[in-house]
Image (tube, rainbow, N blue to C red; front, top):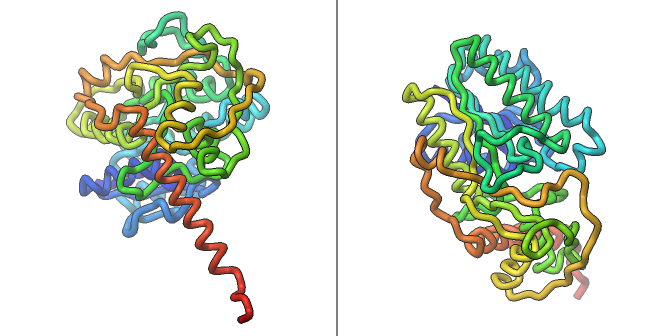
Length: 340
């Protein structure tokens, strides 16, 4: 009765592992550590370094650990990168997911949860965005995730396996107990970058585009706290294990904040007025993405616990400060003592 978490040493995956362990669930992690960190996997949780597209490895792990459910987080997530490297995204997000699904079917795993994205909607005509909205991704990132959704849909129809697909909106924040957070140094999440600017780690913060059809001209996004998102996954797993049918649902709060509103929140919480510069639009950025959340609330009983932008920012800022202090302590240990 083990839950296999792919990408469980990464940002969102590590929070899912914490939620599973906190709930007393047998858990193991498969991660290639390209963007994840060993330190973010709790003590006592088996960590296997490997590729989620390695079918032979997957079949062995499913057999040896008695895996009954898979929660799939591993993948590439940076929209502009997907535009310049589409084949890399189709390999990592689609081809490797196909291998994982095949290993699950072969190993008799009946419950599969997939981390998808609001990017599958592209530039939706209506807001908030319902799960029934047209799927028209405008980036290879969104398309690569949608292809995996299709593979899962067809696999569920053909085999004894059920799935829950969760379409994330903008994930932010960090574990309130300080056990995990967004640690990847090249992460492009707005709140992380703004917190780094507030802490003096960046000379300024770029705002990409100020001419969108939104109230202040900057992109609007629905920000969900990473701990609430992990809770949504636990509810999805409970649903499947209790015999529930396959579902596809949005994960958000149902309201959006603009880039400028987020920046003001970071300045307010941190007390630091850092420099903001205007920059050209980035390819693949829709003007507004806000979730309709009726389905996940009604079907899974999802009730957010940290639905407050200032709370999200405060948790993220606390994590960035801890990373900064840890880095400074590591440098101090390496420096030779001064002669007296």
